[in-house]
Length: 314
Image 1 (cartoon, one colour):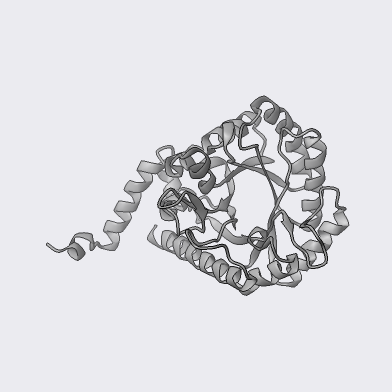
Image 2 (spheres, one colour):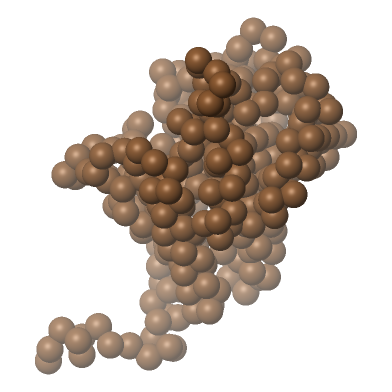
């Protein structure tokens, strides 16, 4: 029997194999969960990969790469500035945020997430994150992203801050999502435990499989199961431990994105997938916006292919 025959399978066999994989990586899900409505994934590109170029070039490039959704990154090198400037300053007005949201939509892109650039344990975190919520609300952005320091995470302080912020976020029709970033909050399981103790629908999990593998060398496939019911978005990046330890674009690392996304492929919810790292492993960093455009397009096509396959197989 040759290798092609060994791996040849019928549609029914593929579905059986898929269900077996689900039982392995998602043991907490009931059988009813497997037949729920498809998740409405919003594949977005962050402006972050274009950080060495002006923000407007990022917006145009993301649209040209075929995306319908955009996520605001951190800073950009504007042509008339000596240093990088924030996409949206922490003290930026709601009018500024509204105008930037309109600018994105005028280019055919719907903004779905913005970086807060505020750690929950920061002094003044409640006031600063509240300001971010107001900006996001004015811009029509449904999610604000936060995470902890790579060397730790003050659990009791996080819970205190999140319990205060939950009602504020809900009042402004915003969700604060928390992703893994090393330290005590470096896994989905750890983040989910905090979110469940806070117990507020305004505070949920963002899953970053690349960070889980990078910072703690933890396999994200069983870890995502521990927080799947709390996930409302994902930061998309892959990771390789060999032949070089580095993050990279989804599909170019060691993480199986079919199994990863299958965990939340049938929630019936709308879940943004925000592409944070779209670089090629081992190769030099892209030095022109056109090369980043090509990386963005490749990443979008990969994720669309994975999602289409998972939804069709079920």
